[in-house]
Image (tube, rainbow, N blue to C red; front, side):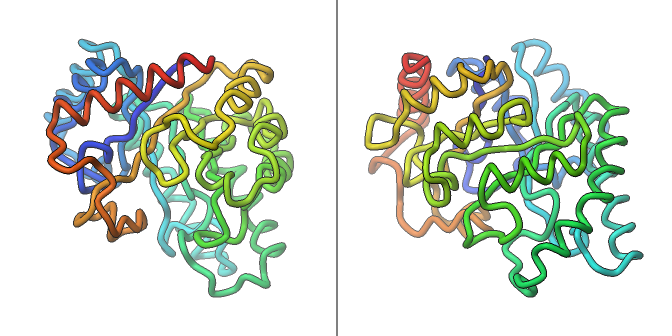
Length: 289
């Protein structure tokens, strides 16, 4: 089992230019993986790529990528030409992620994030996703990358809201490189049982996001942490559990999808306190395992 942390915990923005330093910080806090947004990777200078890879090697930290798609990247578009263009965009992302050594890309990477123009077309859109994802999965296989479709709540997408829906799509696609990202925050809204959702995903589970109900780092509370961790053990999950705390106001995280409208950190929290909170959270979850 690996443990990861999303870059945005330490930043108000989804992306940054301090990835080598943050890789070192992730290791200092006990994490094996740093998860970053994919956007800057598409045109990143080779010198920065080299610095990132060197930091990953020095600190023994893997880099994972994530993100949510806009209309141009939507793999379920009805227009064949637009859909073919989106597939090519997905391939560009796979190549960009591979440049920094990433073998994992997760998010709403199958359709448009927060688009509800045609919710009654759900079944048609899902059927259009199948051949698109089959082509993306084949390409991802050439790079040894797992393309993990995120199951999100009804307020962010209408195609995949439960683990069962995601598994059904995975089975239709039938590619070992097309898998599922479950996130406890979304599951808390949509699933009847968080542990059963993990068992439903089974071998298709390529990544798992953890956070408290209000998107702070995992901590004691009413979420069934023991049941969730036991379910991951029951399915012999040996990939990564990443923390995705969305706790900062005033940046692209808050204004560009994270919807953080109040300060979620203790007043006056400095860098040391941020790290201490994270270390305590990681120890708590490791204790559940």
